[in-house]
Image 1 (cartoon, helix red, strand yellow):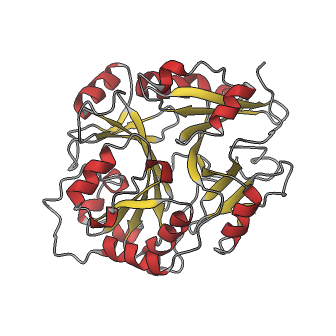
Image 2: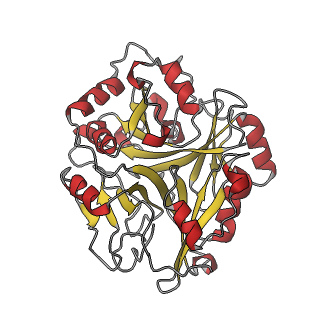
Length: 396
């Protein structure tokens, strides 16, 4: 959530290293951003399983669990014009605006969108975004929202644009949606005027696509394994972040209650897929699953996963760092956020990991809300489950 971050605390406002750009799988950057549907026939299975090794290494670096039952609640993107972005995600990808927070005193407004399961939650959802009732619902959900942050007036500035996070050394990657039929879905989206970075049959990776949203963020479209299992045409299925060192990033997110449900080595890079506790089946030993089994379970999940993409070798480069989306000239992606039972107690746990805070719970104007750093410098918002009084203008 944005508080007054761009102004007061400055909290709000892959691509690949150049030496790796000639790698066979790296010619076009979107080939690295998410490969959950990539055919592995061209991958040398005799390659050292760096992905599995990194997961094992992460286990030796494990942190104590963050107290307060953390659950992944949001991914925040800054947007220029809500009149364009909200219809894009709602009309094209079936999301619902479940809440909004308006801060006229700081000239910004944020919108919370999520996928509500058809025939169930979406039919029952009658709350008014911006109302206290909607706040109570949104700050208590077990799922994950797409938070869209809008600063007043940007839609009227012709030369204004956000940084979508897919250039050299950028850290953010994309968001994604799953669907039963990628080809049919993309044909319909194209007919409605959606622009594409990659159509399903373009490039070497067949059967997946990348669309552009109104701000130029990449939106991956992925095929589900089991047709008709999920009633929705689309479900919000992932946020991808590029990381420098999985041996540091994986234990960090595991401390937030996330589980590695799949890992895959593609030779020059590896992907790690982490699910928040509400999406994890405690009866399943995910580390024992074959890759086909893990991939099938992953693509059939209703809730989203966090995909961490690691370009091999960056962990050994002392000077390498990703941009995190909050630099003055690269603002776009903002953060991911977790709900916890007690922000102060959770931050005591987080502090022990040693990566520091952008904002401590009692820092700045808004008390009881924190922003921690992960190993790559991404900002991690820590929010009290049930919410607090954020000082927004409520809808009666």
